[in-house]
Image 1 (cartoon, rainbow over the protein chains, first blue to last red):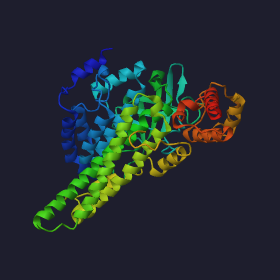
Image 2: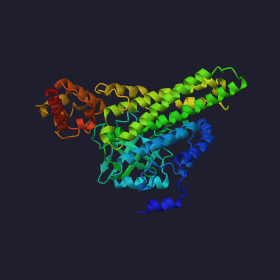
Image 3: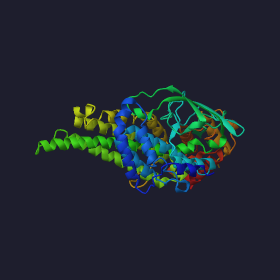
Image 4: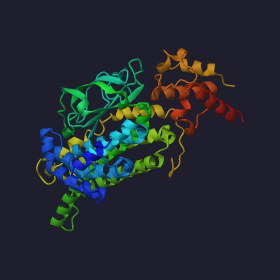
Length: 403
Length: 84
C-alpha cells in the first residue's frame, strides 16, 4: 500500500518547518482578500481552502506516525482564531474539518482502514465534512433515522441530510447513522464516505443572513456497495462525548473569538484616531470600547480554561465522559457564543455608521451577521436544557483551580 | 443486598427503556439499547431515590451505568458506604 506515498510526492509539499501560526497567517491574508466576495455571493471560500491545503494545514492533527504533525486542540484553536479574524466562513470550514478529524484521531487508531484514511488525509490534504443533521430529526445529533444496511461485507446508506456544510466541496463526509436497520435511534455509528463513493442530490440551498460561505446546503446522500470497514464500530455516543462535543465547542468558540477580536481591533483603531484628532478629550466611544475589551478578555479566559481542561482530560475516557466535563463544555459554548455577539455589537456602536456601512475600513456588517449564528449553531436553548438535565445529578466540588 | 431484580424494576420505569426492559440481559449495554443522556440522568435520580444514596461526581461517568450488573455493583458499593 504505497498509494499515499505516491500521492504525497505528486503534490507540492511545503516542508512544514515554519510555525503553524505563520502558515495560518498567510492563509488568513488570502481569506481576508476574498471574504467580502465569499459573503456577498454566498460561495465556498475556495481560495482560503486552497491556501489551507498549500500550507498543509488540513492534516496537522493527524499523528506523526501517520504522516501528520500531531497538532493539539489548543494549537488548532489558535489557528481558528487567526482565520476567524479574516473570514468567518473559511475559519468555520477549517474548524468543522478539524472537529471531524478529532473524531478519527481519537477513535480511529485501532481500525486499519481508518489509519490508512488518516494517512491519505495528511498526504492529500483531504477536506472532511460532517453529516449529522437529518430530516425528521433536526439538529439533535444523538439520534438518527437512517441506518447502515449491511449485506455481507458491504453496506448501503441513504440519508436525507437537511444540512451538510460544504458537502459539495468535501473530499470525505463523516455521517451518523443507526448501527443497523433494527437499532434504536440513539444507537449510532459514524460512517466514512469518500466523495467518489457517494451521490449527493441537492435538496436545499444555504441562503442565509451570515456564514454564507459555509455552503451548508441540504442533500439526499446515497451510498451503495461500500465496505463495512468504513463504519467506525465504536458507539457514536462515545465519539460525541469524548471528542466531538469538546472539539466543537472549543473550536467554534475560537472562531467566534477571532471574529470578536477583529471587531474590537476596529473599534480600538477608531477610538484612537478620534483621540489623536482631539487630544485631551476622551472620545465618546472610549467607554464602550473599554466594555468590549473587558468582555473580550472574559471570553478569552473561558475558552482558554476550557482548552486547558480538555488537554488535561485528553486520553482519559472516564474524565472525558464525566458529567461535570460535559457541563463545563456546554457552559463554554453558551457563554462565549452570547459574548461574541455582544462584543461585535458593542464594537459597532463604537464605530457607528462607519461600521454599519459596507466598504469602509471599519465595516462590521459581515462580522455581525456571521457571529449571530453562534447562539444558533446547536441552539443555546437546546444546550441549556441538556445542562439543566445534567445538573439534576451533578454534585460539584466548589474548587477554583481544579474540576 | 441489592438484587439484579431491584435494578430491573427501576429500569422499567424509564421512558427510553420501557419497551425493552424485560428482554435485557444483565450484561447488555444499556446505551446500545436506547438509553440516552436524558434517560441516564433519570435513571440516576430513580436509583438515588429508591436506595437512598447519592452518586458522587466520580461515579457519574457513562461506565457506571452501562449494564444492569455494573449498576448493581455501583449501587451496592454506595449502599455499603452509606451504612458504614
